[in-house]
Amino acid sequence: MKIKNLLLTLSCASVVFGATAQSHHGFYYKPDQEMIDASLESDSKAPKSLTPWFNTTEFVMPMYNDAKTDLVPSTIYEGNKTDLIPRQAKIDANAAKLNGAVMEATFADDGVMWVTAPSTAQFPTAGTAVTAPGTVVFHLVLGSTPHRINDTDNVLSYTGDRAYLSDCNGVNIGICLPEGATVKAYLSTPNINAKNAGGYDSLGDVMRTAAFDFDNVATGKYVEVNSGAPYNSLACIEMTEEHNPKWPDGYCAKYIDVVVYNVKAGDKVGFGGLQTLHPGWTPAVFAGVEEITVDNENSPVEYFNLQGIRVNNPENGLYIRRQGTQVSKVVIK
Image (tube, rainbow, N blue to C red; front, side, top):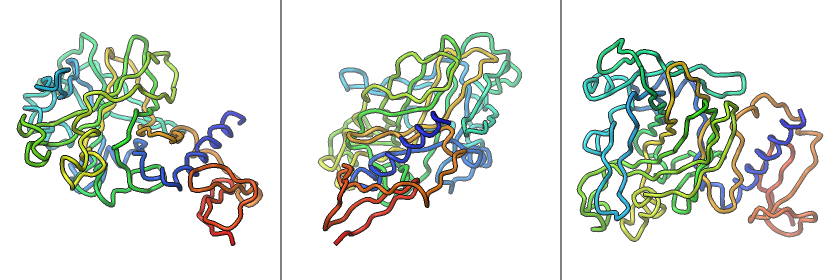
């Protein structure tokens, strides 16, 4: 219980900072069955759809090379621009180009999603034995406007505010890896060309990806960890209003992928969620918080200024008031 209380304190701290100017920075999501159902039912109107995918070949994302003159080929995005695995209908239509299977997911009591790498593949030929390690892909599709990161009026942060990427300096994930596996995260944006990049780009209509690396956390235990800084991030993060006034906070990110490499048939992977990191932002906690009940009425009252700094004796101004899990803005005169 002491550990859970600490997690809750950290979560509440992120809510407090979320109510300040930082509130709309962080993109946040926890996987749930509704997201998976939207994918399987090919619900194109869903704000989020999640496909747990097992790829029998190494998963490669479309990214610039080091010289930023060309794109690295992709194994699941045709021509680096057409998304092949957002929804079941499109998976079926592109079966001949895919290698692997859609995985079934189960949710633990603390909200962590678990999948098991299959022993046989589904595409391109059903029943093909999986004899070599593959990759587990948690593929989130954010749908169309306003559900993508950086779209006006999106509500994708932990606090239900707008999320953007212009100062993203990493991501935080909840993950449980089998021995020998590694993990990366990717934020991807659909078709950027010279026209909607303010003449900045001459590569034509292509998908772009920002990538994030993590230290080796393949311990068989669930952890919530931060990545390193993003790289190959020109499209999603570095491209701002100077390239197109429509995207002052970075280009829109539509696809989020957490990819676990070197997974063998029968291996289990646990996934708790992903959130972007920004200066001054305290990551929220993914697992276990839902189980905790808090006596808000008898909890101490705390005040913070709009920069998230705690104030012991607030006077004359606008403050953030926190009591237990309840957070609000108040004016003190």
